[in-house]
Length: 418
Image 1 (cartoon, rainbow, N blue to C red):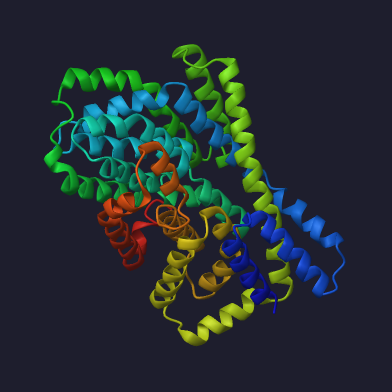
Image 2 (image 1 turned 90 degrees about the vertical axis):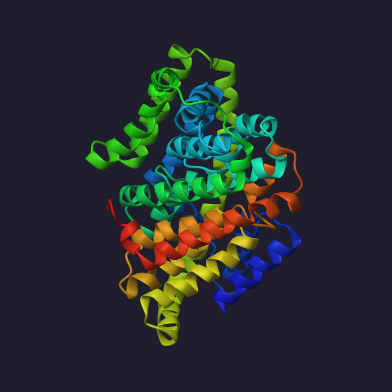
C-alpha cells in the first residue's frame, strides 16, 4: 500500500509538473494521515535526513565549479585540452570532451559541466564548420563524465542515503570516467573528422598551456590524492578545494571580484536549497519504507524472479534507464537508492559498484528527453532545437549504452581502484 502510494503520487507529480520535493512532502503527509501516525516523526526524520556531515560537500563542490568558471580556471583548462588534442581530426570536438573531463574532476556536476564548457566551446566549433546541433551534442554527451570522475555530487548523495563509503565511491569512478571519456572521444572523432583540426600540434604551445593550467590541474590532484591517501575526507577535500580555487582566482589570476563571488554564493545557496529540500522529504519516505519492511519485501520478490546477479543488474539497469526519461537524477537517486541497494547487497553485489553504476545510468537520463536537465541547458547554451539536438546525440547514446554493458559484464573495471 505504502509503496504504491509513493509510486502513484510520483507519477501524478510528473504529469502535473509539480516540483518533486513538494510532491514528496504531500505524499508523506498523505501516508502519515492514512496510517494514523503522529506527525512528530515526519519532522524528526526530515531534519535527521539533513544532519549529515558529508552533505556539506555538495554546496562546497557546487561553489568550486562556479568559482572555476568565473575565475578563469576553466578557460585555462580549455587551452590545455586544445594543445593536447586540438591537432586531431575533429580537434575542437576532442577539446570539448577532454575539457569536460578536466572540469568534471573539480565540479562533480553534469549541469555545471555542460554550461561552462558549452559557453566556451560551442561557438568556436561552429566557426570550424560544426553544425550547431553536433557541437552542442558533443558538449552535452561529454557532461556525463562530470558525475563519474571524482568528485561526484550524485555519488555523495548515494553514499549519504545508503551509508556507503563516499571515498570508495570516488575511487571507483576513476577508471569508468576515463573509459567514458575515451568512448566519447572516439565517437566524436567519427562524427566530426571532416571538420578538420583546431590547431597544429606545438610543443611550445603545450608547454605554455601546461604551465598556465598547472594551478588548475592541482585541484583534482588535491581532491583525489588527499582522499586516496587518507589525509582528509571527501567533505574536507571540498573545503580545501574551495579555498584553493578562491586563492588562485582572487590573488593569482585576479579574475574574480568580491561582488562576483557573493553572486556565486547566492546561486550556490539556491541550488543547494533545492537539493536539501528534496533530500529531507525523501528521508521521510525512506523511513516509512524501512518501518514497513518494504526493502525486505522487494528482496524476496526480486529473488523469486532471479538470483542471477547479472540478470538482476540488467533488470535494475533497464528500470533506471526508463526512470531517467521521466525523473531528474537527484530525486531518482535519493528515492530509489535506499530501495535498490539492500536488494543488490543481499545477492552479494558490492554497493560501491552499484553506486557508480546507478550514477552513470541516471546520468544518461540527464541527456535524454523529455526531462533531461542537461538537454535543456544544452539547448539554451547552444541555441538549438530539442529535436535536432536529440538526433545528433543518437551515436553518443549508443556509445554510452555500450559502455554500460561493458561495466555490467566486467565489474572489475569499476572496482579497479577500490
